[in-house]
Image (cartoon, rainbow, N blue to C red; front, side, top):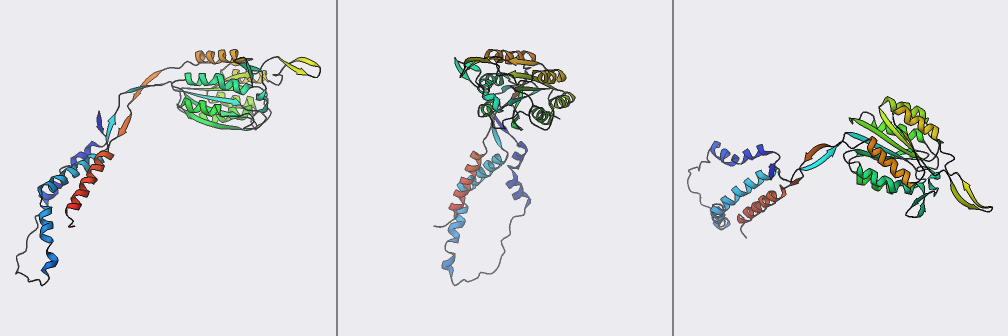
Amino acid sequence: MIHFEWPWLLTFVPLPLLIRWLLPASQVAEQAALKVPFLDDFSGFESRVVSARKPWVLWLAIVAWVLLVIAVSRPQWLGEPIEQSVSGRDLMMAVDLSGSMEEQDFVINNQRVDRLTAIKYIAADFINRRVGDRVGLILFGTQAYLQTPLTFDRKTVTTLLNESAIGLAGDNTAIGDAIGLAVKRLKNQQATSQVLILLTDGANTAGEVAPLKAAELAAENKLKIYTIGVGADEMQVRSFFGTQTVNPSRDLDEKTLTAIADATGGRYFRARNTDELNKIYQLLDELEPVEKDKQYYRPRSELYPWPLALALGFAAVIALSRVKL
């Protein structure tokens, strides 16, 4: 359907008639005839007057004025109502990009991949399922920085996560700074629920804020934190002395991650492989279900360029009709 954003401007349509009615008609002064020796210079005057009095010019001017008023009233085409679900939850993800994330102890499609690749592979589906949540992304290493502010555009969040690279934020791990940045970005928001999902494979080795102190700040601001420790418990590696079994997650500080989750009312999870990581995301869907509070909006398309272009075109025709070629 057609909708006018400023319909009250349509009352200006009879404005030219109102002005003509209120203003007095011009009086033709009666005076003696004046002889002009250069009458040839006024030879085109009569033809222009006749042209101005052509009926079609008057009607064209009326149509142009009506179209101009319609254009300034901002006509819009309203599409069909579209349902949009809004949960009222702000969900921030903090992903570790430190150097240890390049350890290839995960398997996807029978191929070994590094930890960050596994997180990207599983997290993409999780983000796409968060319909109605505002989702944001924090990347951290030696420093923590906001990659994506809170948004309903889940596709953009997924794209920017996939574009992240190991070492982009430094080779160390600033867990406390990542939590502190999340608290800063979520503070004073109007969301009914605020959640941080923090994924790391190590211990806090950098940053200005201690992880437990940051967790206290998060708890004060009612930010719930789910921590996920990423990395296998054992891995077969080849060396000069043959095949050996090593623990690639020996630096993972599970005690601190558990304490962070407990202090904020969240939970700590351990992801040793892609299956466990996927199950953790599915469990998070159950712990933080998407509550669909239905809202509707109607897409709008501006139509004013069409009547405006016609009005200007008719005005040009009127102007040309008064010019003697």
